[in-house]
Image 1: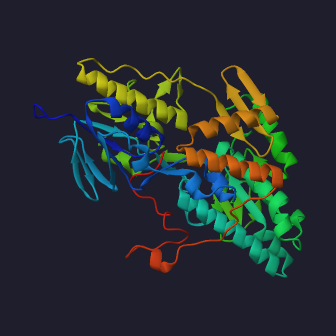
Image 2: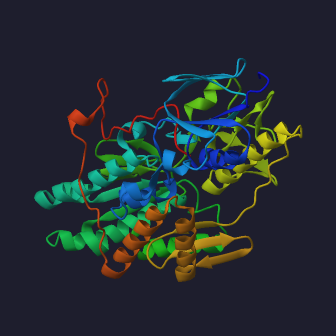
Image 3: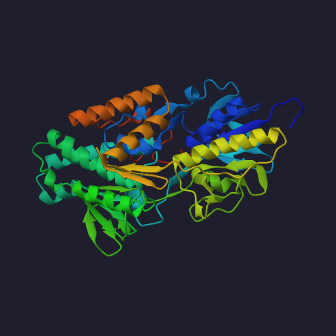
Length: 440
């Protein structure tokens, strides 16, 4: 680094970890460039509410430039990452090269389909705004088609949704879809028999929400069953076809909608760093979240594999945010000539909602279910949402849905062909194809 020139920090990814790091570095004597393929920060935990017609995309996405506006030393570059040269300390992007003295890789994860036949081509993931909008459009369209068909078998297929993955995303989506159907769409489609609607949740383990205490798992199962969700536990998907899902035991479920939330793997950026990755596409980092052999590089969030108290840290937003702040603190310490310190995760609790008045929350040794857990879930997500307008809009929409049993954004809206960039094609949405840099 040239004398008199401030250290340069490049951050890949403007998700929870990257944005937390950028904000924390706003008070440090460095020049920061934050790189992402989108110009917004996405609040991924609420994507399922966009998919289920409760929230508008603008209510869970916030402009990156607005988020860093008060950090004069932080700049933003809209670009994809094409490569990382750790030897010469350069990030290669679609808009040119960026040299760095310190690099924070917070590129997040992408959907893991595990190579199962037909899944990537036919199932809907839920990792981006485009995914959520495509799923919303598809689900509403299937109901329109079901209302128009006289074929009873085809109608039942159109009204069947298979959700694969019993983690928070799958459970929350199952509850949200059930409420959308039985509280809202039944009024929109009075001639459709909603008793024909099937919601089937498939999970390879013997329970749902296995990261939670057994008592909370049982409470979630009871709530899902009460909402009419069929559970297939201890089984996996063997194949996805155009007209059905085939389970490993041979059972076929005729379905027009397959939603995949069964796994996450590290983004393509992991393979650009020149080190081995795990089967899940993660990078085993040092206790300080640094890249082995390259202390100037920090890897955080979904891309980092780090054990804490004998178990791998979960791929959750709070982990990424804390790691982002930790990486910034380590860089500040390095400027003072101090060594990096090990990352210490402070678990503030894990929560999942299964619809109105029902959620499970685990905070240390304490656990909560039902209405109390639901209120805690609402409060936490309002705090974590970026931007006052987003918080207010989400609160108003939640209140509107709660008191009037109505979802305000039941729109089938797709971009026109003219809106697609030249040379780009899209099967379901312009954001369906994942680029190198993904949200955390």
